[in-house]
Image (tube, rainbow, N blue to C red; front, side, top):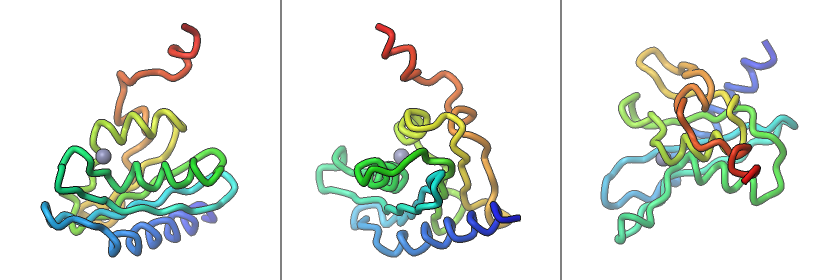
Length: 136
Ligand code: ZN
């Protein structure tokens, strides 16, 4: 029950972040927010650039903000768009999610409101494994 309340707050933070998206080229506005094990929330929005390859997704923005602020383990991430069509995390974001917690819960806007897609590792089953790389 308490977990559901925390997710509601997380989703609201992602919705608020969406209003700050900078997307003059695609017009797609996405907001995201991450929840840490300590209960802190960090949010982000997609930021585009005239040199398209420099654009950053909302999910990575939220995760990088959290990590750069010294946040602990990220336990969940919410992704909000205008509809369910643009809330599937891209491959790059999935790999970044797995880096910081393969078990991170992924919540995104679905047809019937918000749905849980499962964990980051479920969304990217054959991902680069940070533990394997660190053994080299
Ligand atoms: Zn992405």
